[in-house]
Amino acid sequence: MPHEADALHVITVLPPSERFAAGEAGAIALLVRRMATQTETIIGQPPLGAAFPGIHFVPVTPAFRPYSLTRRYAVAVARAVKKLKPDLLEVHNRPDLALLLRKLCPSVPVMLLLHNDPCFMRCARTTEERTKLARTVQVVAVSEWIRNRFLSENVTASVSILPNSIAMADMPPRPPVRDKLILFAGRVVADKGVDTFVAACRDTLLIRPDWRAEIIGADRFGPDSPETSFLARLRPQAKAAGVSLPGYKPHDEVLTAMARAAIVVVPSRWAEPFGMAALEAMASGAALIVSDRGSLPAVVGEAGLYCNPDDVSSLTQCLLRLTDDARLRQSMGEAALKRARTFDVTAIKQQRAKLHQSILHSQ
Image 1 (tube, rainbow, N blue to C red):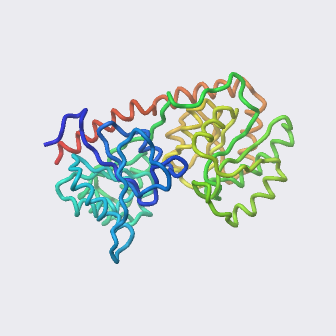
Image 2: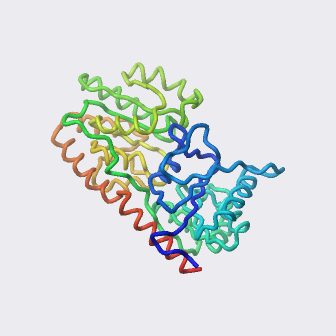
Image 3: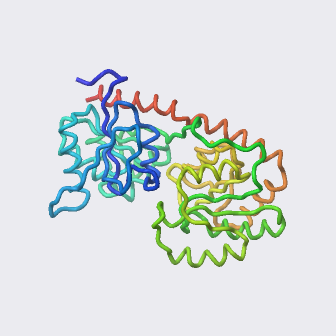
């Protein structure tokens, strides 16, 4: 029988590529840390350093078998599950892993929380695969956009939504006067529209020489991110435009930079499944410019300006408008904070607890 709601034992399973430690965690591990309860156990591969403190973390090493990494990881997780005897498994972003764990742990309900487009995921690419998946595990999406993608091509299924969260109480303090800084923070790849950001900043800084621009990030999360051909081409362009490129920084430093930046830009070309960088910028009280791709409009609403990530002049016009109007920046920052509070972790945790209970009661 399930425990009481306030003592529900959930095991949250990280994707095998995620590490549950400072300086190693990607977006999913950071979210899992933020959402974890006192009765929850996090399972993942051993990090290089110490795991995040204050949370019950169980490291597992993929079993030594002649199978794929996912299957070997699933076997190792299943062994831990059988010892820990949870009420529910919450698997993040891996349909193939969720299906394997449902098979290996048949007595434990499995919830799959999707953070990305399922139509490009193993065991969820086709109508038949997604239909089977929804019949086997409880599918949950972090946005309506992902839900719609799951249900595309005439898939009939029940897909709940549990938005990503932000811990408003833990955000860095905002200075009384923000820096005249235009900031991009995220993966430095073409899909994120960084080249458009550089070009628009070049044109903006020629007209607004008292402002500066900065890109925080690298090709991947972590200090060992490789120097890609895209980065190699972008560096001289950024230098000529007057845009600094300090590289990867830990997440807390990124949030500190957002708290002092007057303007944050999220000009993604690809359809953002959620748009965590935009939510963090709103929670920092920055004036925000985003593209209209994927879930960004649903997350940002009327709390930001919108640009075409493939049109440099579109972003430049937004930047010139904001850099010229301090009152507009202030009002947008206030609207962004109000919008971000609707995603505060306290409220999202309550939604998650109700969702867990409904899954258990449906078994």
